[in-house]
Image 1: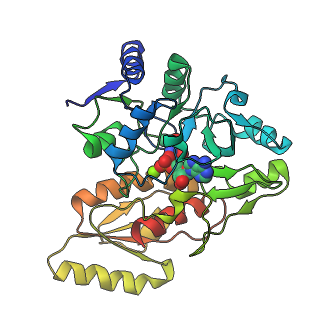
Image 2: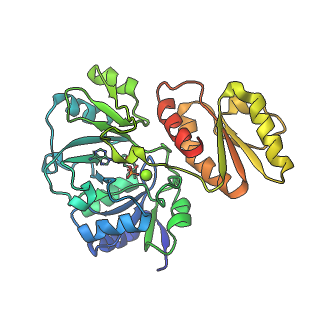
Length: 329
Ligand code: TXA
Ligand code: MG
């Protein structure tokens, strides 16, 4: 199969719509990461997503809808706080887990009684969702376990020959996957940290819990138990205080004939003059936006990426650290 990359426009949207209604899958941009989409009620198409990605069969997919779509068609909204969150943070990088009405096929929800729903803010995503006017289920458009794609070219690098079309909506502005929030209980509970932070949720609804995923738990968000986001080269993860260890490992890799790169915030890079650096930028927004891009650039040029941890885990740094541990830890 030839994989085409096409800028989002009237013609490519028409082609994407035709492919989707013919039971094919299509790469689509969102403001977080690129998604691999299929019509959420078409179990044959949804199975293709799992096959193409090599995704474990027990890891459910998020249903994406446009901003005027009536969520009551898909889920039961039990708690008033969920409306507040929808009003404040959507369209945007927040996924809400509700009790499902069973409209989306069981292949997508993995037979569970909940459904994760997201209203992406990316203009191209909205246009596609409007054009089809039905929910599209979409995981990140990477091979399972690999780093999530933030450009159409990244999707192509993983899925070339496996899908017919990737809609190109430019580089994702967010850069890490949406916050997944369980809103089935009295208090919202973060299942996966992202750019809509615990602090932001508390500021709107007064409380928010973080789900703890311990060994042996009945995990509420199956995806979090898997190894994820890994680049193809070797990786290591250090705290900023361990600068001497970072330098030592770097020199060791060099002496062995390797090509090490240190991936860190710009402020940390200032202390590493003369070293090869993958610059993450400065501040949580910029670092989130660059994280996967730098990992995917790094795996092409480095034998070893030595990543440096964030200064704290407040705000969006929580989601960034979660990805850093899984990709490089
Ligand atoms: O930003 C995003 O969320 C991107 C873009 C494409 O929208 N999508 C994405 O999908 O990251 P995926 O499949 O890579 O991750 C979905 C996460 C997984 O951790 C999965 O376990 C969780 O959401 N999830 C999906 N449905 C769920 C449900 N019903 N209950 C709990 N967790 C669920
Ligand atoms: Mg993913």
